[in-house]
Image (cartoon, rainbow, N blue to C red; front, side, top):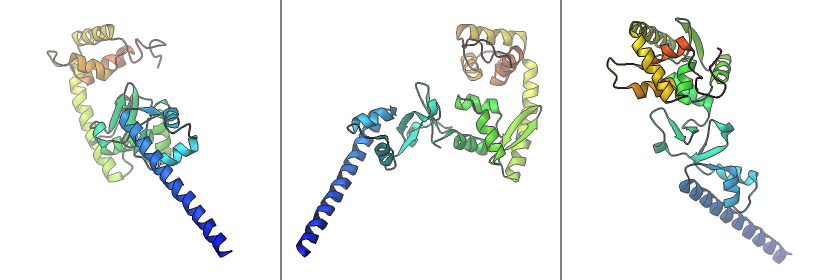
Length: 245
């Protein structure tokens, strides 16, 4: 009986050791796949590991430094490499978007917290290139952010009252500065913006401002935003035509 117990123990140990080795090898294969391609999907991971199940892949992913896209319903994966992210903590590959924070809500919270004057919905949408309204409303509801109105615009701010007061003061200062700048939105500015949209349909305000850079006198992104608002240009050149909102 004693010999039988030793045999059973040895077999159990051998099976366990084999499982550990297989898991280590699978993790290494997964890491190699992440190193080989900038973006991958779950099916590619399953194929690389011999038709592994989804459950197996998710168990292995815990041991790998990765990030899921915050658009396309998190379908795409990339290696979590801090050198890939820009100064906003974002990484884009062929329209697939990633954040060093991992998900959209955490990214919005960080961007608002780091900003000295908070953010409007539009500013966040332009930065993140996705709709953020639903996330913002949920975060306000759960007191992760606070919303306040300045010059008729909702500004999303830090939940800490001291930081929020400082952000509001900076936002008001920014508003006064922009109000002075916006007096310079002449017909010539409007024409330049419209020409850019004709040449580059579907461009966002930031795209137009970059393409006009170097114009004399200078045309800022604030000028471009005024023209977009005045003529409802947000969706011009996109499927569905101009926005009705």
